[in-house]
Length: 572
Ligand code: FES
Image (cartoon, rainbow, N blue to C red):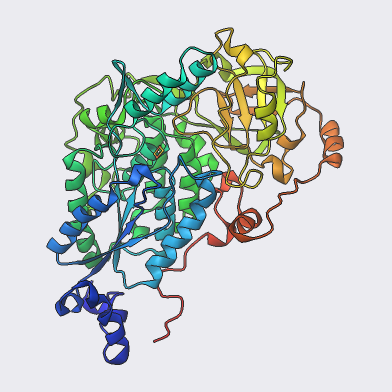
């Protein structure tokens, strides 16, 4: 791109009073005058926060990016944006994904930035940054923070999925609080995000599958020096991308989204992938629906043997060759000619990939599991669809099952009654949780993989069908139907389910039905009343009034699409 076309020239290229103001204050940071002479200005969008421990090493990572930018003749300027830490933010980081995306979008558009590097790590930091940048559509490259090293506890490998196992053992009295406290330190022993194929790892794979990163981005551990090398090379590359005017919309084509969906199925990625990818597609103007996920995933078996669907960890994935190996294995199914940020195609980027551990990365001929990674079910209980991750089921027999509903009206009801000895439940029942959707429990928390009642656990049962309008942690597992749409809080059929109703789940035929007559449902609907949400101001009120349903990506309705890179109003 010619120097005159750089966005930043609208600030630093000015003369007179305006140019004085734009440059003079920047010079208080010690930049020589020639930095403002027409070099591409590269924003480094940093989600560092000590409250987001998975991104706690991002100051250092940003330094590596800067080195690359300087080397390539660019002018790097780091800026902070709202950071969403999965473990601390209440009620759920997802409530703020769209808010953070607005911060990213407006920070990029309002400033003299020609290209941007997005530093992403913990779950929501990736979609929020990609969504925000997509609405601006300037040259953009993503650098993920990388996974933690595998946890080690008493001689065994552990990761985030073990939190659920430890929790059930603790509830059954099999381990003490002291043992839990010891395990805490053993699990999170290095920088980085969750070490399993949870949502953060899924997002890191997603951005690589979409072509938004350099090859190998997904799996290099945060603690590995090669993560810094990748950041450094990304810094160099973004300057070239600005010179080539290679924008996000040229990378994020319909074909790129389809590749990401197929690869997510093969790696056993998180169900949260569906919601985030739909939201990103909505920002960049690609028409994507749940049917695309269902159709494209149907023929893809599980190739990656990582927790929670398998046994290994992200560190093992990297040593086995990383995502390029999966891409190469899948290349006959993928759109192989889509372009990625390095200017090369998917096929070119993966052509030299080699698998160093077939236990970790399997082949299409001999997959880890034949069960597809993701399925979309439909029926009168979820007219707009619901999502299940068959590969995470602990009892494949439940993939086709009829059972009696045991209903919890909301999360408080669930917490209050789950372990009640008088709860009328057995292992053939189906647990139903209402009002935890995008609007009902603002932000749609990850409570969909409900714990089993204690008295069921005591029988040695490890899985039951669970259905809700909520989400599940990418590290969770079980036969769990999620994202029921429309949600209970907007009067979806889920709101009408009662104890004792019969529900049929048939994953092979993609069905989820409530065996209650239309007449009876209409009777119940006549008595249904919307929840009193009780949030009359601020962002939560904005969210409740504008959030779309799960099958549309749960974005805010007025954020769909983009405004491009023009400043909102140029006052000078
Ligand atoms: Fe940050 Fe899992 S808590 S990635």
